[in-house]
Amino acid sequence: MHHTLCDYLAEAVQNGFEAGATLVAVEWVEDAEWIRVTVGDNGRGMDEAARKRALDPFCSDGAKHPGRRVGLGLPLLAQTAQAAGGTFELKSEPGTGTTIELTFRAAHVDTPPAGDVAGAVAQWMNLAGAGRTLLFHRRTPRGGYRTDSAELGEAAGGLETAAGFLLARGYLAAQEAALRGDD
Amino acid sequence: MAKLTLDDLRKLRDTKKREMNQRETDGKTVTVIIGMGTCGIAAGAKETFDAFADEIAKNRLGQVLIKQTGCMGLCYSEPTVEVLMPDMPGIIYGKVDAEVARRIVRQHIIGRTLIDDHIFDKPHADLVPSLTASKKAG
Image 1: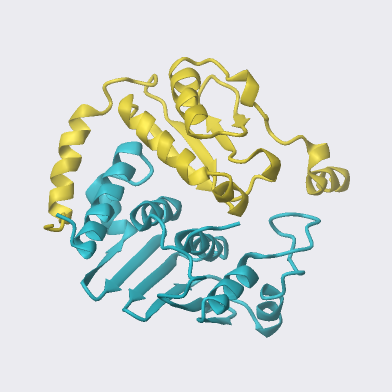
Image 2: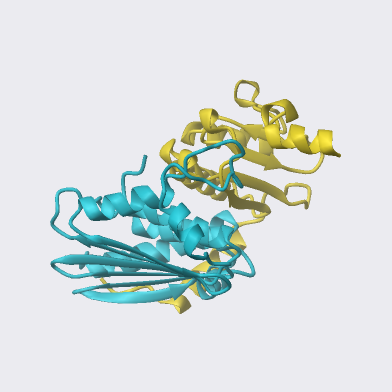
């Protein structure tokens, strides 16, 4: 269903906000060998039974889709990381929040392409909207940047207006271009 | 390439702000809600989102808000988009690719005319079992 890492991460970010989180933090660290991504939230969290159900593709709580008997989000994400020589770890406690830790071998043929990082992060920040925060931290061997939706939203004039969204996306695209060393 | 700073962004914002709001939507807020669930993204909702942002900005519609939601339960007609504006019925459009998104801005939001061949309306209660159940229970 998904083609890029950003598509998978979009789902993890949505899950965090849907779990009542006011803060979702995405950290994306790359080196020559590994891509490591962590998505953490301060949402309602899961107990051990719920964590097991979340990783069972033939299980869904039916909250979003009454009558549906499959829940593929996290199982497919875990499978994708493991197929790419990486790892998947889910940590969650009720009342504390949930953290997903992913690693992918950078050069593995099954590691999904990153996708449009700037466009994706701008859309996640739009999803956060007012009153919730999306933190994003990216680090590569060429450098890194850290930003959050509250700060970027203020500077851009609001992430829910077209002009503000486009400005924020442009800002993020400039950070990505600097990481690539584009002229 | 030198990084763009947040102060640079604030200056750009002030320039853009003067350019926007030149076309009024009767002084009232319009909300475009794009379904960005797994099914929506798989069907191209990211491109739909970008097309709305681009076309709204091009038409200087400063009072249109773009928001997101998860799956609306109409996976077969993704990408789906709900448009809410004063003096118009709330409409859910289906199969909204980038071109249809631009039509929605020009025809629905500016022209106040529905795009008949993409209307899915609100999901009727008999299409959503939970709504049917809650109605019976109520």
